[in-house]
Amino acid sequence: MVNKIKEYWFSGLIGIFMFLFIIFITIVAIAPHNDEKERGFSKCTYEMSYELNVYGSQKKIWGIVGAIFNSYVCYINVMRDGFHNFIDGKQSTPWENYLFTPYTMEIDKELSEPLSEDLIKASKLNDSDGDVFDFSQKENDDDK
Image (cartoon, rainbow, N blue to C red; front, side):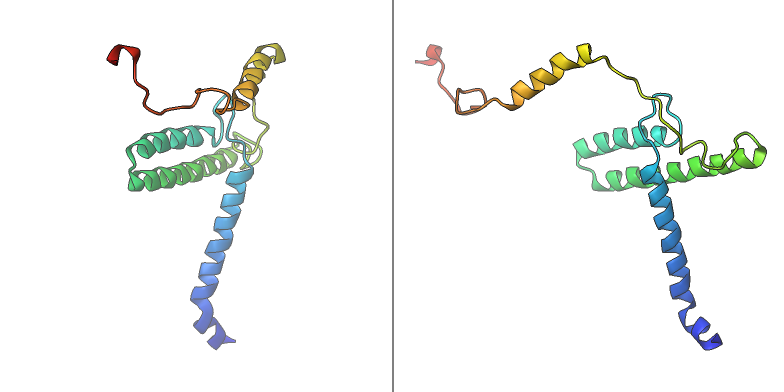
């Protein structure tokens, strides 16, 4: 038994690390990221999306990897803050600051319907009906 532990201790350590990482990813995946009040992981998500937009437009691969890494560090800090708030008695559970029902702004259907109808009509445009999407070079009448 002792020989098996000596032989496989590193595999066991890696297995425990992978198990904890899967739990972490699951918590991040099920937590809301679109809270209007920017509670929990929503601040991390907004920062990451901004950084990905900036680095993606500049085509900087290491900047994108850094933005994703920074977002995971931010997620860990949110979890750590929740644990500290639980220890200090500021919240009843350690996950109360990132597992919650999000507050999202509801838009009236009267306000959203015209936009969605326009989007549906625009998606049904057929470029064979006209030259809506024709980007070929055409001569102007002034050039002749």
